[in-house]
Every structure is written in C-alpha cells, then in structure tokens.
Length: 207
Image (tube, one colour):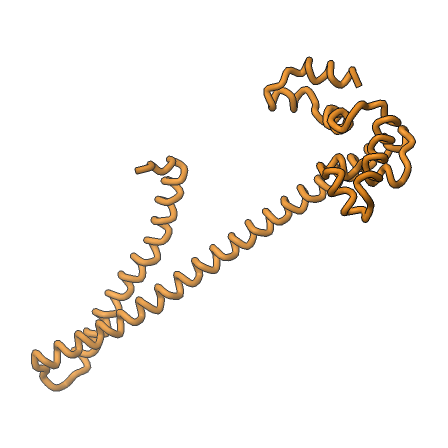
C-alpha cells in the first residue's frame, strides 16, 4: 500500500485534532447537561420515585442531552463545511486568475507570431491568396484540403504553392515549414528535445 507523504500525514493529523476538539467539548457539555437535568428532576420531585420512574427520567434526560449534543455537532460541522467552501472558492478563484493570465500570455505570443509570419510574407512579396494558402500549409493542411477550404481547385492551390516556394527561395513544402519552425526552436528547446543546438543553429544559418 502506498504510504502517505509526511507533509500530507501532518496535515491530516492536524485536521483530525481540530475536528476532535469540538466533539470532545460537546460530549463533556452533553454529559454535564445530563447530570444537571437528572439532579434537578430528582430534587424537585416531592413524591418518592420508583426504579421505573428513575429509569424513565434517566432515559428522557439522556435523549434530551443527546439531542443537544447532536444539534451542536451539526452546527459545528456546518461551520467547518462553510469554512472549507470558502477556502475552496478562494482556491478556484486563484486558479481561474492564473488560467486567465496564462491565456492572455498565450494570446500575446500567438499575436506576436502572427505578426512575424505576416511580416515575412510581406518581405517575400506574397499575394493575398498566396498568404492564405501559406498559412494553411503551415497549419498542416494538404493541397486538397486547402482547395476545399478556399472553394478552389487542387491545381490552383498547387500553382499558388509553387509561387510561394519560388518567392521564398525554398525548394519544397518541408523546407517552407522548417523555415518557421527553426526560427521558433531555440537552443534551450533543442536541449529539451535532445537535439544538438549546433545542428539547429547550422540548419537555421542555411536558410
């Protein structure tokens, strides 16, 4: 069986102690109330009580004290649950805020990348139609898929792709896609992918 980590075990022990304290207090209070009620009943009764009467008094007082303990325990658990709900709500809000920050940062990166790609297309002198085809090629669509998306023909897309290769001085689609991927693959990324940074740098210089 997998052992719990020391930190998790300490947190569990602390939580157990915090939960045990109110219950212990409630049991003590309930016991005290039971004896007080029983004593009052016995002292205020003028007639002698039989064993059955005493037993009934004990049962009634026990039920009353038990009901008080249960109600107090429910109230205590309700406070604990409310506290947990508040902590959980705060945690969810914190995670949502972090997620929003990451989403905004990702959008900024994508916007910068789109501007860089558009700038490169302008430098190559691509037409508006060629830009659209080039973007879809970078996204991995085939000529047939691009033709369907642009309501064109495969022959037209192939002609536009050939024009893109000629204007960019890149021989084929693989080199065209690699041109942009190499620019995004830094030496740190190369180490993470277990690729030699020198190979990445040399390949980028060849472009």
